[in-house]
Length: 539
Image (cartoon, rainbow, N blue to C red; front, top):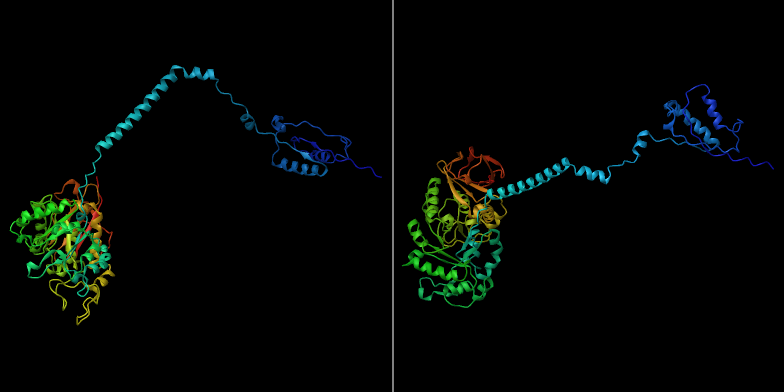
C-alpha cells in the first residue's frame, strides 16, 4: 500500500521587494516548488515572522506596478501547492493617526481658564451678549410703537353690508296668477344669488284702494295669503300696534313711503325710530320721499339716527359726469357722518329714469358709493315699465323666462329675462351679481373713505380706501364718445395717493381683459363705460 503523501504545509510568507534581475524568476519558482529543492521539505512547517513593510529599508519598500504583476504571478503559482497569506502594512499616516491624543489635564485647564486674559475675554463676551439682547428688545419696542395703528372698524349693521331689494308688488314679482306669500319662498334662492342683504316687502297689509276706513295695518291682504303664510316666512308674535306687531312677528325693519306728506314728518319719524330701536339696534326704519330737495331731505334726517331715506335726489341730474359728481359730493359733504342710501326714487324702476345705455354705469356707481344701494325688483335685468304690450306701468311683471307673459301676441326675447341673462356672463344680471358680491366683502367699499378726483368733461372718478386694505378706483364715462383719461396725483391725502398703474377688476363693457395692468395717465374708455380698478396699499 502506497504511503499517503504528506499534505502541503501552510505558511505565512512575507515577500520583500527585490530588485529586478535574471535570478528573480528562479527564486520565485523555488518558493512555489518546494518539493524539488532540498532546502525545504513537506514535513517542515514554515513559521516566519510577519514583517511590516513600512519598517523595511528603502530598497525593500512596496513594489511598483511592474513588480506587483510579477508578484501576483508568483502568488498564483504558490497557491497551487499551498495557501500563501500576504499581509500589507498600514501607511505611516494611518499609523500616526492611530496614536492616542492626550489633551490638557484638569489642573492644566483650570490654570489656563483662570488666567487674566481668559477672564477678561469671558466678561467681554458676556457683556456683548446682554448688550445685543437688550438692543434687539429695544428695536422690537421701537418697531411696535412706530408701526401704523390699524384703524378701528366702525359698527356695522346688516343693512351696511350690502344692497336692499324692494319687492313692492308680490304678484308682479312672481307672476300675475300666482303671486302670494307662500310663493315667495320659491324665489329665495334667486334672491340669495343676488348677494343682497335684505328685501323690502310690500305693502302686504289689507289696503282697500281709495278707502282709508277699510285699511287694516294689522291684517294680511287676503289676496296675498294669510297670517299663517306670513308665519312660514317670519315668526308669529303677539299683536300690540302696527309697528310692534310686525317687529314682534320677526321683521327686521319697516318702510314708510311719502313721509313728506305728513304734517310733522320729523316728529313721526323720530317716534317710529324709537319704537323700532326698542326691539334691538339691528332693526331698521326706512322712509321714502319723492322730494329731490337736499334741504328737505336734511330736515327729515336731522332728528333720526340710522334712518335710511330713499328719495329722488339723484333723479334731478341731467346724467352727465360733471352734474352727477356735483350732486354726489354735495350730498356726502352735507349729511356728514349720517349713513346714506342710494336710489333714484322711493319705489320706481331705474329704467323709469335712466336711458338704457346708462344702466350698467349706475349699477357700478351705486355699489361703489359710501352707503346702502337700494334697488327695485327687475333693476338687475333692466326691466322696463311699459316696453312690452300688456305690461302694467306701475308694477311690470318680472320676466323670469319667455313664458312670463302668456297673453302677449309676440314672444319675449330671452336676453331680457332672468333665464336668458343667467346664462350670459356679459349680461346686466351677471354684472349686478359681481358688483354686489364685491361690495359685500371689501372693507374699502363697505365703509371706506371717499375722495373724488379731478377729471375731464363727461367723467366722474373717485377713490375708495380703508386703512391698509386694498384700494379701489372708479372711473365713469357718462358721455357717448371715446375718452382718453389722464389720472395722476392731485390734491389727495397721502393715504389716498394714486399709483402709476392699477389692475382692472371689471368693466361695464364686456370684452375688456380683466386683471390687466392699466396706466392711469393713459386710460382709454369707450362710450358709457365704467371701470373698477384696484391697487394695493403702500406704506
